[in-house]
Length: 172
Length: 108
Length: 88
Image (cartoon, rainbow over all chains, first blue to last red):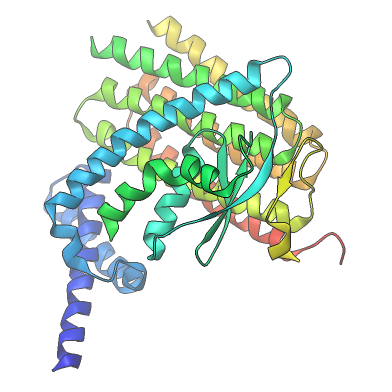
């Protein structure tokens, strides 16, 4: 019984990957004639056979609307931080004395799944003055262009505070 | 109207690209160069592609540009992450002004 | 308007040439690789502007392919950097 359930869940993952790849194909080609659809279906079958093992484990999370709501909130926060990052880069690059004080700091995260950690690392890379160097277990190693404080709690709040709660609501 | 919006977005994007290129020339060591250049140039090119979306509207070219934005985004951030990790493992030291290095305990 | 777009195209191409300066002069190998990575992203911007000028959509296909190829290329270069150490 349990094995049967597992196989059904695996089948649903294949179907989800197939549907997503067909949507991606239609967005890329933007052509709804029958030959194009057949070619897209064949390419999507190959894609789903090859890459389903990298897909998220629980497919039903894709169907919950509140996750999309939090994703939109996250996107707004993220674009705002991104613009701030670029003004920060402009300030550091154009300032004659170049106020930089770089170093690598270690930050603990409470996120568990790999996808959430990847999203957090990408967000950190686009926020002002920080870029992720490595992820080992629960610790992120972050290169910071201007270290504002030496206290671990303070800089953990500055770096991950803006995103961690939204990512937790989106993925976990 | 749409043409004006797309021109303004493309101009903003090119200003960001210019800042990134100044950063790649001026900043003192590899880590800081990568840091400034990735952020500024990625956002600049995303802005240019958004300008293309506004110019073409909802047609095949518009959707292609819209698909290209997240691809460019994830591609460049993951590439920068891999590159900075490779730079550290290669043995390049942090620049002379650095104050802190937590990562060296892990590597050696 | 078309004139202004021309100027923007030339500025973008000039920026890629600035990246070539870092590729040629860069004191160490990772510096050159940063130059290659940023050059790859800038070329996508050139493709996008040309697609507006010529009103053709297939140039955006070239841009998308360029994004993916430059991503794979940078990952390969990073792998090379990780595998080889200076003190060996």
